[in-house]
Image (cartoon, rainbow, N blue to C red; front, top):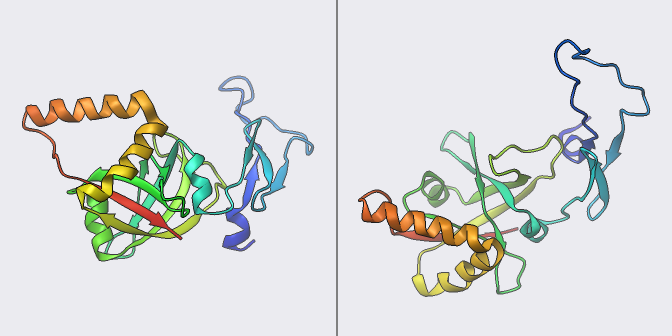
Length: 186
């Protein structure tokens, strides 16, 4: 199976019953379902139906996305981030991050990114779709207003809480005020 077909295959994963109860339980062939994911199709993962994102803008519906940037050596560094659709409506996604973060330093050298849906800890499910793109760094505070509004609208109280924690950290002399927007495009 080539890399492309492996990336678009999702398995119905069931947890093992635990130690002492047949930690490796044989499953019937009927339970070992593999569903092929096509753009815009619905598949089952861990007992719930999800829609496979057909493109970059579809990842705007995800709560968290694993954003992979690349070191000089070509090694990828994945970070879970909040992502929202840009208010411009042109299919780009936006992310906010400290200007001094490692991902911004890596993106200044190499704008390539790889995005995959993930959980808040950055765990990517097996077979999660991969979307490749490029990132533009937006440093102009006036140009950041719309993207910040989109992120605040999507994440609500969580965004406000993180903002409060950041302000407290700055008052204590820890943390940076300088934020940038990453505009992600195909």
